[in-house]
Image (cartoon, rainbow, N blue to C red; front, side):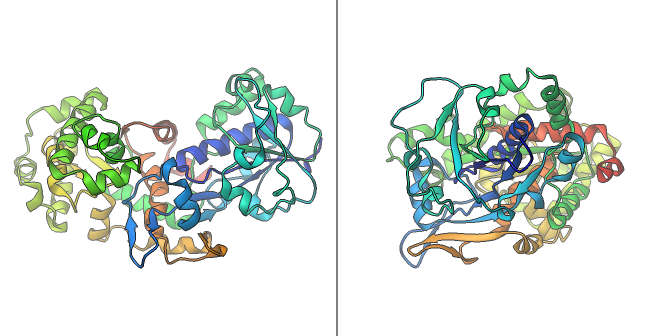
Length: 459
Protein backbone atom coordinates (compact mmCIF):
# COMPACT_ATOMS: atom_id res chain seq x y z
CA UNK A 1 0.00 0.00 0.00
CA UNK A 2 1.09 3.58 -0.50
CA UNK A 3 0.11 6.75 1.27
CA UNK A 4 -2.72 7.37 -1.16
CA UNK A 5 -4.63 4.71 0.79
CA UNK A 6 -6.87 6.31 3.38
CA UNK A 7 -8.47 5.34 6.66
CA UNK A 8 -11.02 7.46 8.51
CA UNK A 9 -13.72 7.35 11.18
CA UNK A 10 -16.78 9.27 12.33
CA UNK A 11 -16.81 11.82 15.09
CA UNK A 12 -19.57 11.08 17.59
CA UNK A 13 -22.34 13.65 17.50
CA UNK A 14 -22.72 14.20 21.24
CA UNK A 15 -19.35 13.02 22.56
CA UNK A 16 -17.14 15.21 24.72
CA UNK A 17 -13.55 16.33 24.31
CA UNK A 18 -12.05 13.27 25.98
CA UNK A 19 -13.83 10.76 23.73
CA UNK A 20 -12.91 12.56 20.51
CA UNK A 21 -9.33 13.14 21.69
CA UNK A 22 -8.83 9.45 22.45
CA UNK A 23 -10.49 8.38 19.18
CA UNK A 24 -8.03 10.53 17.22
CA UNK A 25 -5.04 8.98 18.99
CA UNK A 26 -6.41 5.45 18.46
CA UNK A 27 -6.97 6.22 14.78
CA UNK A 28 -3.35 7.36 14.51
CA UNK A 29 -2.25 3.95 15.80
CA UNK A 30 -4.45 2.21 13.23
CA UNK A 31 -3.05 4.41 10.45
CA UNK A 32 0.47 3.49 11.55
CA UNK A 33 -0.33 -0.23 11.60
CA UNK A 34 -2.07 -0.23 8.21
CA UNK A 35 0.35 2.21 6.54
CA UNK A 36 -2.55 4.44 5.53
CA UNK A 37 -3.04 8.18 5.66
CA UNK A 38 -5.46 9.12 8.42
CA UNK A 39 -8.27 11.43 7.33
CA UNK A 40 -9.26 13.02 10.64
CA UNK A 41 -12.81 14.33 11.03
CA UNK A 42 -12.98 17.72 12.76
CA UNK A 43 -13.32 18.07 16.50
CA UNK A 44 -17.00 18.77 17.24
CA UNK A 45 -18.31 20.79 20.17
CA UNK A 46 -22.07 20.81 20.72
CA UNK A 47 -23.95 23.83 21.99
CA UNK A 48 -25.85 23.35 25.24
CA UNK A 49 -28.62 25.67 24.03
CA UNK A 50 -31.55 23.69 22.68
CA UNK A 51 -34.42 25.45 20.98
CA UNK A 52 -37.82 24.33 22.23
CA UNK A 53 -39.82 25.49 19.23
CA UNK A 54 -40.70 28.89 20.68
CA UNK A 55 -38.99 32.25 20.75
CA UNK A 56 -37.40 31.36 24.07
CA UNK A 57 -34.80 28.65 24.59
CA UNK A 58 -33.78 26.33 27.38
CA UNK A 59 -30.25 26.71 28.65
CA UNK A 60 -28.66 23.53 29.88
CA UNK A 61 -25.84 25.03 31.85
CA UNK A 62 -22.51 23.71 30.64
CA UNK A 63 -23.10 19.96 30.74
CA UNK A 64 -22.69 17.13 28.29
CA UNK A 65 -25.74 16.20 26.24
CA UNK A 66 -26.82 12.64 26.94
CA UNK A 67 -28.21 10.05 24.55
CA UNK A 68 -31.84 10.84 25.35
CA UNK A 69 -31.41 14.27 23.75
CA UNK A 70 -29.78 13.11 20.52
CA UNK A 71 -32.95 13.38 18.43
CA UNK A 72 -33.67 16.90 19.64
CA UNK A 73 -30.05 17.91 19.09
CA UNK A 74 -30.24 16.48 15.58
CA UNK A 75 -33.25 18.59 14.64
CA UNK A 76 -32.60 21.78 16.60
CA UNK A 77 -29.02 21.63 17.87
CA UNK A 78 -26.04 23.73 16.98
CA UNK A 79 -22.36 22.92 17.06
CA UNK A 80 -18.93 23.98 15.90
CA UNK A 81 -16.39 21.93 13.98
CA UNK A 82 -12.68 22.67 14.42
CA UNK A 83 -10.05 20.91 12.28
CA UNK A 84 -7.78 18.97 14.61
CA UNK A 85 -4.69 20.47 12.94
CA UNK A 86 -5.64 23.79 14.55
CA UNK A 87 -5.34 22.16 17.97
CA UNK A 88 -2.78 19.36 17.64
CA UNK A 89 0.63 19.09 16.02
CA UNK A 90 0.30 16.85 12.95
CA UNK A 91 3.91 17.30 11.86
CA UNK A 92 5.53 15.50 14.78
CA UNK A 93 3.79 12.13 14.12
CA UNK A 94 4.90 12.30 10.51
CA UNK A 95 8.49 13.25 11.39
CA UNK A 96 8.94 10.68 14.16
CA UNK A 97 6.84 7.75 12.93
CA UNK A 98 5.83 8.48 9.33
CA UNK A 99 2.16 8.83 10.35
CA UNK A 100 0.47 11.15 7.88
CA UNK A 101 -2.68 12.88 9.16
CA UNK A 102 -4.83 15.24 7.10
CA UNK A 103 -7.99 17.09 8.01
CA UNK A 104 -11.21 15.78 6.54
CA UNK A 105 -12.04 19.34 5.48
CA UNK A 106 -9.01 19.28 3.19
CA UNK A 107 -9.76 15.85 1.71
CA UNK A 108 -12.14 14.76 -1.05
CA UNK A 109 -13.29 11.14 -1.33
CA UNK A 110 -12.96 10.26 -5.00
CA UNK A 111 -13.73 6.55 -5.07
CA UNK A 112 -15.73 3.74 -3.47
CA UNK A 113 -15.51 3.42 0.31
CA UNK A 114 -15.18 0.17 2.24
CA UNK A 115 -17.21 0.49 5.45
CA UNK A 116 -15.97 -1.62 8.34
CA UNK A 117 -17.04 -2.14 11.92
CA UNK A 118 -14.14 -2.86 14.27
CA UNK A 119 -15.45 -5.43 16.71
CA UNK A 120 -13.87 -6.33 20.02
CA UNK A 121 -16.04 -9.41 20.63
CA UNK A 122 -19.25 -11.13 19.58
CA UNK A 123 -20.68 -12.38 16.32
CA UNK A 124 -21.57 -9.86 13.61
CA UNK A 125 -25.24 -8.93 13.30
CA UNK A 126 -26.37 -9.91 9.82
CA UNK A 127 -29.14 -7.31 9.82
CA UNK A 128 -26.89 -4.42 10.74
CA UNK A 129 -27.09 -1.72 8.09
CA UNK A 130 -25.35 1.57 7.65
CA UNK A 131 -28.54 3.49 8.41
CA UNK A 132 -29.06 2.04 11.88
CA UNK A 133 -25.37 1.60 12.61
CA UNK A 134 -24.43 5.26 12.27
CA UNK A 135 -26.31 8.07 13.91
CA UNK A 136 -28.73 9.81 11.53
CA UNK A 137 -26.91 13.16 11.35
CA UNK A 138 -23.91 11.52 9.67
CA UNK A 139 -26.03 9.72 7.12
CA UNK A 140 -28.43 12.55 6.28
CA UNK A 141 -25.71 15.04 5.51
CA UNK A 142 -23.01 12.71 4.30
CA UNK A 143 -21.16 13.76 1.19
CA UNK A 144 -20.43 10.18 0.21
CA UNK A 145 -22.12 8.75 -2.87
CA UNK A 146 -23.10 5.65 -0.92
CA UNK A 147 -25.22 7.52 1.62
CA UNK A 148 -28.55 6.23 0.30
CA UNK A 149 -27.54 2.67 -0.52
CA UNK A 150 -27.51 1.29 3.01
CA UNK A 151 -24.38 -0.88 2.54
CA UNK A 152 -23.67 -3.40 5.26
CA UNK A 153 -20.35 -2.71 6.99
CA UNK A 154 -17.90 -5.58 7.24
CA UNK A 155 -17.30 -6.50 10.86
CA UNK A 156 -13.63 -7.09 11.61
CA UNK A 157 -12.65 -9.01 14.73
CA UNK A 158 -8.88 -8.96 14.29
CA UNK A 159 -6.39 -6.20 13.65
CA UNK A 160 -4.84 -8.16 10.82
CA UNK A 161 -8.21 -8.15 9.03
CA UNK A 162 -7.99 -4.37 8.89
CA UNK A 163 -4.37 -4.47 7.78
CA UNK A 164 -5.35 -6.82 4.96
CA UNK A 165 -8.06 -4.54 3.51
CA UNK A 166 -7.21 -3.84 -0.13
CA UNK A 167 -9.57 -0.96 -0.82
CA UNK A 168 -8.23 2.54 -1.36
CA UNK A 169 -10.66 4.10 1.15
CA UNK A 170 -11.51 2.36 4.42
CA UNK A 171 -13.97 3.94 6.86
CA UNK A 172 -14.14 2.59 10.42
CA UNK A 173 -17.39 4.26 11.50
CA UNK A 174 -17.65 5.39 15.11
CA UNK A 175 -14.32 4.45 16.62
CA UNK A 176 -14.01 3.20 20.20
CA UNK A 177 -10.82 4.34 21.89
CA UNK A 178 -10.11 0.82 23.17
CA UNK A 179 -10.54 -1.01 19.86
CA UNK A 180 -7.80 -3.63 19.25
CA UNK A 181 -6.10 -2.30 22.37
CA UNK A 182 -4.26 -5.51 23.28
CA UNK A 183 -3.53 -6.55 19.71
CA UNK A 184 -1.90 -3.20 19.01
CA UNK A 185 0.50 -3.63 21.93
CA UNK A 186 1.89 -6.93 20.63
CA UNK A 187 4.15 -5.40 17.98
CA UNK A 188 7.30 -3.69 19.23
CA UNK A 189 6.78 -0.72 16.93
CA UNK A 190 3.36 -0.13 18.48
CA UNK A 191 4.87 -0.27 21.96
CA UNK A 192 7.31 2.46 20.95
CA UNK A 193 4.46 4.51 19.47
CA UNK A 194 2.37 4.05 22.63
CA UNK A 195 5.26 5.31 24.75
CA UNK A 196 5.52 8.38 22.52
CA UNK A 197 1.77 8.98 22.76
CA UNK A 198 2.04 8.82 26.54
CA UNK A 199 4.97 11.22 26.66
CA UNK A 200 4.44 13.86 23.98
CA UNK A 201 2.87 12.76 20.68
CA UNK A 202 -0.61 14.15 19.89
CA UNK A 203 -0.79 15.05 23.55
CA UNK A 204 -1.23 18.80 23.94
CA UNK A 205 -4.11 20.70 22.22
CA UNK A 206 -2.05 23.88 22.17
CA UNK A 207 -1.75 24.83 18.50
CA UNK A 208 -4.29 27.66 18.56
CA UNK A 209 -2.61 30.71 20.09
CA UNK A 210 -5.66 32.48 21.64
CA UNK A 211 -6.60 29.36 23.63
CA UNK A 212 -3.00 28.87 24.73
CA UNK A 213 -2.70 32.53 25.75
CA UNK A 214 -5.85 32.30 27.87
CA UNK A 215 -4.61 29.11 29.55
CA UNK A 216 -1.17 30.61 30.21
CA UNK A 217 -2.77 33.66 31.83
CA UNK A 218 -4.83 31.47 34.16
CA UNK A 219 -1.79 29.42 35.17
CA UNK A 220 0.18 32.58 35.99
CA UNK A 221 -2.70 33.96 38.06
CA UNK A 222 -2.85 30.75 40.10
CA UNK A 223 0.82 31.14 41.04
CA UNK A 224 2.41 29.18 38.21
CA UNK A 225 2.62 25.58 37.02
CA UNK A 226 2.56 22.97 39.75
CA UNK A 227 1.16 25.36 42.36
CA UNK A 228 -2.52 24.45 42.09
CA UNK A 229 -4.82 21.45 41.92
CA UNK A 230 -7.51 21.25 39.26
CA UNK A 231 -10.93 20.18 40.49
CA UNK A 232 -13.70 19.25 38.05
CA UNK A 233 -17.18 18.73 39.49
CA UNK A 234 -20.04 17.32 37.40
CA UNK A 235 -22.78 18.14 39.87
CA UNK A 236 -25.59 17.05 37.54
CA UNK A 237 -24.05 13.63 36.99
CA UNK A 238 -23.20 13.29 40.68
CA UNK A 239 -26.79 13.80 41.79
CA UNK A 240 -28.27 11.97 38.82
CA UNK A 241 -26.18 8.88 39.60
CA UNK A 242 -27.93 8.58 42.98
CA UNK A 243 -24.80 9.36 44.97
CA UNK A 244 -26.81 11.28 47.55
CA UNK A 245 -30.29 12.50 48.41
CA UNK A 246 -30.94 13.64 44.86
CA UNK A 247 -31.64 10.09 43.71
CA UNK A 248 -35.23 10.00 44.98
CA UNK A 249 -36.13 13.11 43.04
CA UNK A 250 -34.57 11.60 39.98
CA UNK A 251 -36.71 8.48 40.20
CA UNK A 252 -39.88 10.54 40.37
CA UNK A 253 -39.17 12.26 37.06
CA UNK A 254 -39.67 10.96 33.53
CA UNK A 255 -36.70 9.97 31.39
CA UNK A 256 -34.83 13.15 30.55
CA UNK A 257 -31.45 14.81 30.57
CA UNK A 258 -29.65 14.58 33.90
CA UNK A 259 -28.57 18.20 33.56
CA UNK A 260 -32.11 19.39 32.88
CA UNK A 261 -33.28 17.41 35.90
CA UNK A 262 -30.84 19.05 38.28
CA UNK A 263 -31.33 22.58 37.02
CA UNK A 264 -35.12 22.44 37.05
CA UNK A 265 -36.15 20.22 40.00
CA UNK A 266 -33.32 19.94 42.50
CA UNK A 267 -33.80 22.46 45.29
CA UNK A 268 -31.03 24.16 47.19
CA UNK A 269 -30.83 21.76 50.13
CA UNK A 270 -30.33 18.80 47.76
CA UNK A 271 -27.46 20.59 46.02
CA UNK A 272 -25.88 21.65 49.32
CA UNK A 273 -26.10 18.09 50.60
CA UNK A 274 -24.45 16.86 47.40
CA UNK A 275 -21.66 19.38 47.88
CA UNK A 276 -21.19 18.16 51.44
CA UNK A 277 -20.77 14.61 50.15
CA UNK A 278 -18.31 15.83 47.55
CA UNK A 279 -16.02 17.10 50.34
CA UNK A 280 -15.46 13.48 51.41
CA UNK A 281 -14.61 12.55 47.81
CA UNK A 282 -12.08 15.38 47.65
CA UNK A 283 -10.38 14.39 50.90
CA UNK A 284 -10.25 10.74 49.85
CA UNK A 285 -8.77 11.54 46.42
CA UNK A 286 -6.43 14.45 47.07
CA UNK A 287 -2.69 13.68 47.43
CA UNK A 288 -1.77 12.89 51.04
CA UNK A 289 0.51 15.90 51.47
CA UNK A 290 -2.26 18.25 50.34
CA UNK A 291 -4.86 16.51 52.49
CA UNK A 292 -2.66 16.89 55.57
CA UNK A 293 -1.99 20.56 54.78
CA UNK A 294 -5.71 21.25 54.34
CA UNK A 295 -6.56 19.51 57.61
CA UNK A 296 -4.12 21.44 59.77
CA UNK A 297 -5.14 24.70 61.49
CA UNK A 298 -4.40 27.76 59.33
CA UNK A 299 -1.42 29.62 60.81
CA UNK A 300 -1.62 32.84 58.83
CA UNK A 301 -3.95 35.45 60.44
CA UNK A 302 -5.01 37.02 57.12
CA UNK A 303 -5.85 33.72 55.41
CA UNK A 304 -7.58 32.51 58.56
CA UNK A 305 -9.73 35.66 58.64
CA UNK A 306 -10.56 35.53 54.94
CA UNK A 307 -11.45 31.84 55.09
CA UNK A 308 -14.03 32.50 57.82
CA UNK A 309 -15.94 35.14 55.85
CA UNK A 310 -19.29 33.69 54.72
CA UNK A 311 -18.93 32.87 51.02
CA UNK A 312 -21.98 34.93 50.05
CA UNK A 313 -20.22 37.98 51.56
CA UNK A 314 -16.88 37.29 49.91
CA UNK A 315 -17.72 36.80 46.25
CA UNK A 316 -16.89 40.28 45.01
CA UNK A 317 -13.79 40.41 42.78
CA UNK A 318 -11.73 42.51 45.23
CA UNK A 319 -12.25 40.15 48.15
CA UNK A 320 -11.50 37.06 46.07
CA UNK A 321 -8.33 38.65 44.68
CA UNK A 322 -7.19 39.32 48.24
CA UNK A 323 -7.99 35.71 49.14
CA UNK A 324 -5.93 34.36 46.23
CA UNK A 325 -2.95 36.50 47.21
CA UNK A 326 -3.21 35.24 50.79
CA UNK A 327 -3.38 31.62 49.55
CA UNK A 328 -0.26 32.00 47.39
CA UNK A 329 1.58 33.72 50.25
CA UNK A 330 0.59 30.88 52.58
CA UNK A 331 2.11 28.38 50.16
CA UNK A 332 5.31 30.45 49.95
CA UNK A 333 5.79 31.07 53.66
CA UNK A 334 3.98 28.32 55.60
CA UNK A 335 3.13 25.16 53.63
CA UNK A 336 3.88 24.74 49.93
CA UNK A 337 1.33 21.93 49.65
CA UNK A 338 -1.62 23.87 51.01
CA UNK A 339 -4.18 23.29 48.21
CA UNK A 340 -5.18 26.05 45.83
CA UNK A 341 -7.93 24.73 43.56
CA UNK A 342 -8.77 25.67 39.99
CA UNK A 343 -12.45 24.73 39.80
CA UNK A 344 -14.16 23.78 36.58
CA UNK A 345 -17.75 22.63 36.48
CA UNK A 346 -20.30 21.60 33.93
CA UNK A 347 -23.14 23.03 35.96
CA UNK A 348 -23.33 25.88 38.50
CA UNK A 349 -20.69 28.60 38.75
CA UNK A 350 -19.23 29.19 42.20
CA UNK A 351 -19.53 32.98 42.22
CA UNK A 352 -23.17 32.80 41.08
CA UNK A 353 -24.23 30.15 43.60
CA UNK A 354 -22.03 30.67 46.71
CA UNK A 355 -24.58 29.15 49.10
CA UNK A 356 -24.45 25.83 47.26
CA UNK A 357 -20.65 25.79 47.39
CA UNK A 358 -20.51 26.89 51.05
CA UNK A 359 -19.63 23.42 52.48
CA UNK A 360 -16.77 23.03 50.00
CA UNK A 361 -15.48 26.56 50.63
CA UNK A 362 -15.49 26.05 54.38
CA UNK A 363 -13.19 23.03 54.00
CA UNK A 364 -11.12 24.40 51.10
CA UNK A 365 -11.25 28.22 51.02
CA UNK A 366 -8.70 28.63 48.23
CA UNK A 367 -10.96 27.73 45.29
CA UNK A 368 -10.95 29.91 42.16
CA UNK A 369 -12.54 29.84 38.71
CA UNK A 370 -12.19 31.33 35.24
CA UNK A 371 -14.90 33.83 36.18
CA UNK A 372 -12.62 35.20 38.91
CA UNK A 373 -9.84 35.80 36.42
CA UNK A 374 -12.18 37.47 33.97
CA UNK A 375 -13.37 39.84 36.72
CA UNK A 376 -9.80 40.63 37.75
CA UNK A 377 -8.76 41.34 34.17
CA UNK A 378 -5.91 38.80 34.30
CA UNK A 379 -7.40 36.95 31.33
CA UNK A 380 -9.20 38.52 28.40
CA UNK A 381 -12.80 37.32 28.74
CA UNK A 382 -13.20 37.63 24.95
CA UNK A 383 -10.37 35.22 24.07
CA UNK A 384 -12.92 32.93 22.39
CA UNK A 385 -13.76 35.45 19.65
CA UNK A 386 -10.60 34.56 17.75
CA UNK A 387 -11.86 30.99 17.42
CA UNK A 388 -14.34 32.13 14.79
CA UNK A 389 -11.44 32.09 12.35
CA UNK A 390 -10.91 28.32 12.72
CA UNK A 391 -14.39 27.05 13.63
CA UNK A 392 -17.19 26.10 11.28
CA UNK A 393 -20.37 27.03 13.16
CA UNK A 394 -23.32 24.89 12.14
CA UNK A 395 -26.90 24.04 13.08
CA UNK A 396 -29.56 21.65 11.91
CA UNK A 397 -32.71 23.41 10.79
CA UNK A 398 -35.74 22.48 8.75
CA UNK A 399 -33.84 23.04 5.54
CA UNK A 400 -30.86 21.02 6.67
CA UNK A 401 -27.41 22.28 7.46
CA UNK A 402 -26.95 25.99 7.97
CA UNK A 403 -24.13 28.25 9.10
CA UNK A 404 -25.05 30.28 12.14
CA UNK A 405 -23.56 31.88 15.23
CA UNK A 406 -26.78 32.92 16.95
CA UNK A 407 -27.18 29.75 19.00
CA UNK A 408 -23.55 29.16 19.94
CA UNK A 409 -21.89 30.39 23.13
CA UNK A 410 -18.33 29.98 21.88
CA UNK A 411 -16.79 30.67 25.29
CA UNK A 412 -18.87 27.91 26.86
CA UNK A 413 -18.16 25.26 24.21
CA UNK A 414 -14.43 26.06 23.91
CA UNK A 415 -13.85 26.37 27.66
CA UNK A 416 -13.27 22.59 28.12
CA UNK A 417 -10.16 22.82 25.92
CA UNK A 418 -8.77 25.68 28.00
CA UNK A 419 -9.68 23.78 31.18
CA UNK A 420 -7.67 20.78 29.99
CA UNK A 421 -4.67 22.96 29.14
CA UNK A 422 -4.74 24.69 32.53
CA UNK A 423 -5.40 21.48 34.48
CA UNK A 424 -2.56 19.74 32.67
CA UNK A 425 -0.11 22.16 34.29
CA UNK A 426 -1.36 21.66 37.82
CA UNK A 427 0.12 19.63 40.68
CA UNK A 428 -2.72 17.12 40.73
CA UNK A 429 -6.23 16.67 39.37
CA UNK A 430 -9.55 15.56 40.87
CA UNK A 431 -12.69 14.82 38.89
CA UNK A 432 -16.03 14.03 40.57
CA UNK A 433 -17.45 11.76 39.28
CA UNK A 434 -14.39 10.61 37.37
CA UNK A 435 -14.30 10.04 33.62
CA UNK A 436 -11.75 9.38 30.88
CA UNK A 437 -10.83 13.06 31.09
CA UNK A 438 -8.83 12.32 34.24
CA UNK A 439 -6.36 10.07 32.42
CA UNK A 440 -5.77 12.75 29.77
CA UNK A 441 -5.02 15.41 32.36
CA UNK A 442 -2.82 12.99 34.29
CA UNK A 443 -0.74 12.38 31.15
CA UNK A 444 -0.44 16.12 30.57
CA UNK A 445 0.66 16.70 34.17
CA UNK A 446 3.29 13.98 33.92
CA UNK A 447 4.56 15.49 30.69
CA UNK A 448 4.71 19.02 32.09
CA UNK A 449 6.39 17.80 35.28
CA UNK A 450 9.33 16.37 33.36
CA UNK A 451 10.15 19.25 31.03
CA UNK A 452 10.65 22.97 31.43
CA UNK A 453 8.53 25.56 29.68
CA UNK A 454 11.38 26.22 27.26
CA UNK A 455 11.62 22.57 26.18
CA UNK A 456 7.83 22.43 25.81
CA UNK A 457 7.98 25.34 23.35
CA UNK A 458 10.71 23.57 21.41
CA UNK A 459 8.55 20.46 21.09
